Length: 448
Image (cartoon, rainbow, N blue to C red):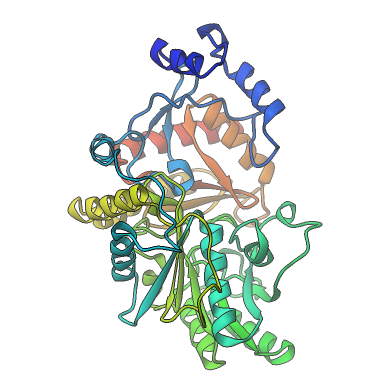
């Protein structure tokens, strides 16, 4: 951190100098001030908020890392993308806050039109903006319950939809997320289509979509009075699981058969990450509801609930204070246009194919790499004790992540119990991907 930014902190009233710029100092200070949430300070250092470019980020000691997390799928165009900075500077004088759920403003309306236009289906849609993906999920759920008058929903195991309220009730990827918290929804839950570990003992070659039949049976014995089925088109936090398209279509058809809505949770997989604006398009399904978040805000906290018109039976059924503030809406509109002008959907698909090819080389090389799967720039590597038993190897995964971050300087995250995920920013190049795979290769070699 340079003198200018240290001085800014001093001007804000803090006694800070360069001697304090160590990871251990700031991790200790953070631990004393911040509630424990998802930090793993045994692995990661303290990031420097003043530097970084593209997929290069730095900690406060000046160590450079190659980032393949994309801010957990938030930073579509990487760190400090120059055209983004220039555009944001050009709108710095706009009003920052207007209560968008109480009054209309042009940027929010234009963004709603664009979001409705890039999401699948030509049916009439309405959009509610919010401040996170979890809240976007909740907005869709409330709408489906309101429109149908039904209160039960279909969810999957594993699944991640958020850590609050209704979203938490649908989440089932880690018991730590929900143990001890009361659940706000009645959920009929079935296994997520997980071909590598099919709970029904089949494989893709002879699959008869037993997972769909399991849902049919569940509805028969538990009741089919459901408002909505909520499904991730790629199971993200649960382990980067890519379901068979015929399973997704089967779940969708069964949902419609019983008169319920179908919702796609696109918070992590959407906004072009898979080469489609919405990942559900890879499965040939047009959902009734779409929950978006993360990348849609262009680096700012934003989510969007997209649903059928009208989304609610009347006014005041749903609202919150912040809703696609003018500056944020303009940045999101700029992001969508930049992605279109830069042909990023095609690039993401091509780079994803290349990344899968390189990671499959590691699968061929190591007995402990059980599966590589993904679509576009959303890819997971599952670690096992050996390929034959497929026994999960969570401790090995954790060791690889720690080695990758601390020794190979590859900024990476896990997912599920034994998976490493790649969700890099869209500006990543094939040279960057080669570099990332080589660093991961060294981390695996030193950990097995």
